[in-house]
Length: 301
Image (cartoon, rainbow, N blue to C red):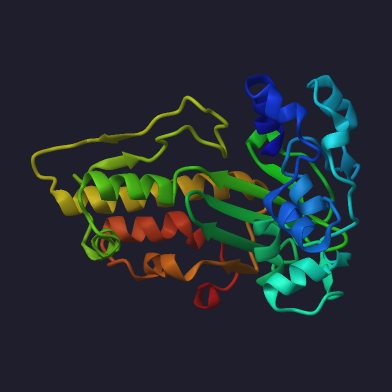
């Protein structure tokens, strides 16, 4: 969300702000170094909070209302795949490449991942997990669902948009648990193989606020229902369950009124969800994340 960051710089680092020529996304800056030309494109620009997504343009009225200089916003290219310039001689020398190679505009990370995975229809869902987690669904019209904590962005294609439900509480929360428990990633993932018990603790993973569906920066996490019967493994397993349920919250918000999925793209690193033991808690874990939505369960993962 580059817009709020730019406001912060203007207020807290005014000298830096006054000396800036462009306010660019990282890939736009890198492309500028390659081509000597500076542009923005819709898939990244639409995530700045300075963009009119339905109108497919910079929202200059909002930018001005925030007291920001509209000239900092680079000219918009029509889409991620269009040429954005050519490799300069200087950049080519540094890379060992000939000058003049066309350089495409490029796309935002989630938009590029969706395009690369073939997620192009409203029946497709993609889940990506990193520091946070995102579930996205392409849509045919730019309909706002901000009231549900669901974002609307431009896709990497020449036309199109996608809705995104996002949680801050994925790898960030799991890494915190891993560090305070002095556990390796292998130990954390292996805890999913242990049978769940009715008295297992419940982990609420919102350690730094949450996005979808709560949009609450003050939300905080906890372990609840702790007892003497709990051990290190149950705490680790509870952390995985808590993150899975946070993703499910985002998925529920994303799919409100659309309960049928043709394809669900999952990252390889969370395939273990489909392999949990068939104990009551394991079944619940599977069911909460997957089952109500599949059109074809056998081909889901």
